[in-house]
Image (cartoon, rainbow, N blue to C red; front, top):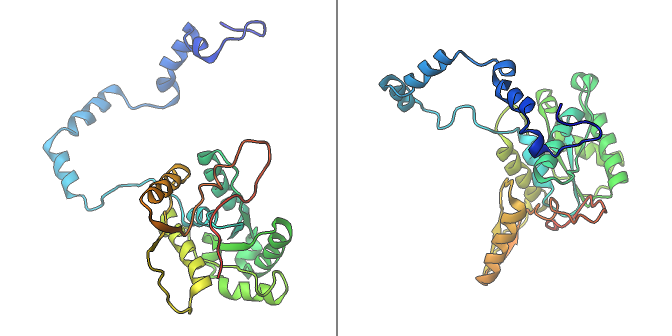
Length: 278
């Protein structure tokens, strides 16, 4: 081999060595189970023909098998854009681990979220006890100003009523009666992460202002940036441009600071985001 314990090569020159060149050249043949070259050539030629063209023009779907995630992921992202808000997902631990790792891998920042840890028992008898205990632990351990509750497939399939569960949790003392616990039903088997984001933001807005008298503030606009994987840069640039134009604005949800904390060795569970007040 070109390197040893006494001779360590950087990855760039290492991969130029004959052994690695041969391995990479044979990777597709040995590990990717490719179709025969003739079949690939025939398919390529078919894609240039009139029959294939007519099939494409006859398609009704704009996109086939689009790249999308499930609703609770959007709900977790939406909750991160409100001040000191902990996302609480009523479902299994594995689902929440996926949402956290997905956001962390993209933003290269820690993503906080908790779950009610539903298991087979909760799937049969309902997840009320899990939610009550989970809200109590979240309130006691993480000191949030608000807990935003969403759901996964398991909770939605058995029909758990979030509004009733949250009211029961407050009556049992899991969280104070006046503590803000907005919620949104976000079944993962329909819609996408975009729908989950919309539902969570709507749930938070309804929690604070449903039934309130409608008022209008002259000379200002409200902005809901949506599910944006580039919110760290886009939201700040949009704010900069609006400021240059002298526009008065309010970002309803903004996760740009939450997913761009300083690299100073100090972990910030909550950072920045929008204040949610009545």
